[in-house]
Amino acid sequence: MILKTADSKKDVFYLINKHSGVVSRAEAEILLEFLFNCEKLDLYVKEFIINKTIEELYDLLVSRRLSGEPAQYITGRAEFMGLGFIVTKDVLIPRPETEILVNEIVGARFIAPKILDLCTGSGNIAVSLAKLIPQAEIIATDISENALKIAEKNAALHQASASIKFYKGNLFNALMFAENPKFDIIVCNPPYIKEADFPFLQKEVRLEPRIALNGGKDGLDFYRDTAKESRRYLKKGGSILLEIGFGQREAVEDIFLSHNIFDVYRIIRDFSGIERAIWINLL
Ligand code: GLN
Image (tube, rainbow, N blue to C red; front, side):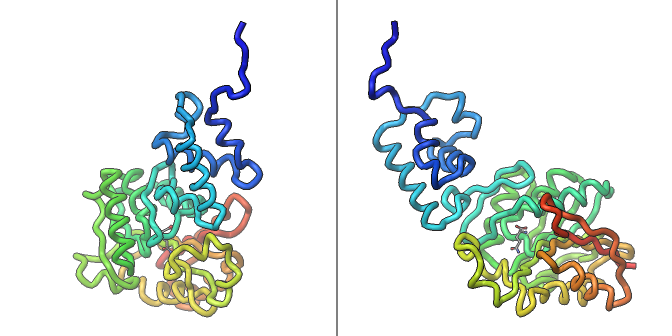
């Protein structure tokens, strides 16, 4: 007969449940994957020794999370399109909603497209597109040198460096030294938060780079600049795919339509039914 003693061995479930009132299971798993340097599935199939040091380290990670630091910044890793990306405080944490942009482009089955990814951040969009459309030729830009370094690391991590060129600069200025910068597709998840809304953002979001979020007074600065300048960089009939913020659809449409050279081809909603992306074509 096997007798269970009072101090029976602590396991992963013990840790997952330890802070269950304050940390979700999904977040506990992310922190434990990091702690044990393993994949999520391993947590449930492998045996881990949970000693006092491990428990203390876990408690420390949880307290950082509870102080408002996003789990992805603690672990230095975020998932996007099923791929693992390196993230630091220099880049925006990729969001699941942004996968819409990638899925739309992949679903449209372009043949060997030339793609421009503006505000590449961690490189999540550019790298996923490079993996999913191997013949694509991609240019990715960002105003932040530190962000570009992370994006380059992510491209290398996923063996996508050969298909992506990186340039530093503000929006289209970054293309000054690019060879033949004419694209089939311009894609971007631009900064679109109104300046006045910053104090009301979640603590977690306020830890992300402000430059990656700030869309100016009405949140629409980037859309105006893109509408004004993109014509020079698009091939005839070329496409622009942009993420948009809650309630911005009409204003963004008006900005583009006022130029009389664009057509709004599609509006795509996210999982919550919110209009989240806009697909515009150059006539
Ligand atoms: N392209 C990155 C993303 O979608 C970063 C966007 C940004 O910095 N505004 O997450």
